[in-house]
Length: 471
Image 1: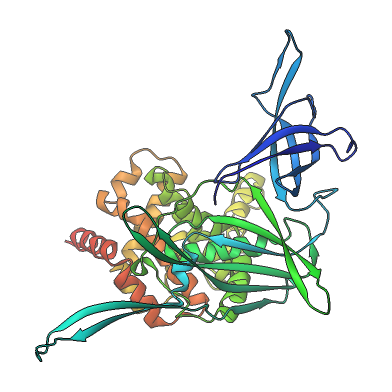
Image 2: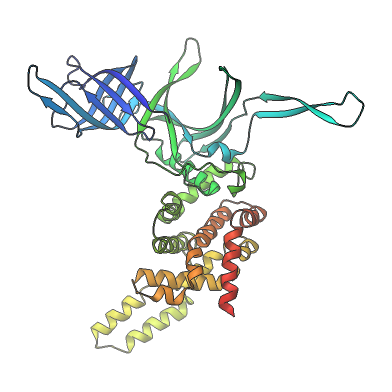
């Protein structure tokens, strides 16, 4: 997203006849700053500020005074006030953040274009034969035929939305002092349209779902870039058009490393968008918080490796609770017998009975069994290639999680080999990604390809550690 600077006048909705001049600046991450030439808020916050700048209406939401303003007393009394809005809307005046004024939202996302793997930029190299009659070919020219791809739609009935993947092309010819250039750029975007008008934040859930889907597929934390709200307007006649409203807020900085096709574990070629997105939205809701914990390993990559191992193990536990809720440790009849027998041993000892009740309050399987059951979900050939020995991986992950969770100094180092510790997070994350691929209906061949092409190096290194531990 490009930086933006807008010079204009600004006022409170309750005092439209008392505007103050100022400059609104928005950086590449969506953070905004308004510097005013007079006092507007004083020491008070304001939920809404209106503005007019560069010929457009502007709404600032959740504004608060910021450091940087000053009052100067001298030959003239001057005031500079700095305001920090949380949200900026360029193209509309809202009376409240709760105004339901928008029909859709179009967003750009890092690596979305690469993930789709579809392109309307068709290039052909043309060669000509040799004039001397030989078989030698000589390069003649490049033919570039740009064409806009057909959009693909996914219907989200529960949300009352339609999410559309679309592609746009831009081309430019520039002649400079030393050279001439012709460039063609292609961009994939997602547009979410609702059946009924919504607030500016009413599309967040679906946009976040698509962002996480791109993160899953590319293995790189995806960041949402440019955001454009859409207001459907009637045109002369019977048609409608979308009036764009720029949406800016601090979305945080992210890893924008450009991925190559070899980094991606599945693409739009492997799935049907119309089936994938509804299935992903449903799965995301089903798994819940553990999915956020898993993706934190992609979005926040600077943690200590111990924290990363603990988060990977916690995500595995959470996946089991969500995807295998009926799993039990022992048969129900035996479980009831164990509880009854244990309590009967201490009929007159409340403390002992309370302790037994706490230890036998549920029939959940043990941690290692839960880890093993998660590993049973994906294609087993892919799992074996990834982990080499599933039982040993599960044991190491269990031991690491318990050592870290109970803060037992030295236990992690004693129970898990050093080289395994450094691979444990990545391999567990990869296993959970295979679980998600299986739950989304991706084929065994696609899962195996992901292990071979994407996870293979770490899988082979982990395999060497496993074989060494068995000697």
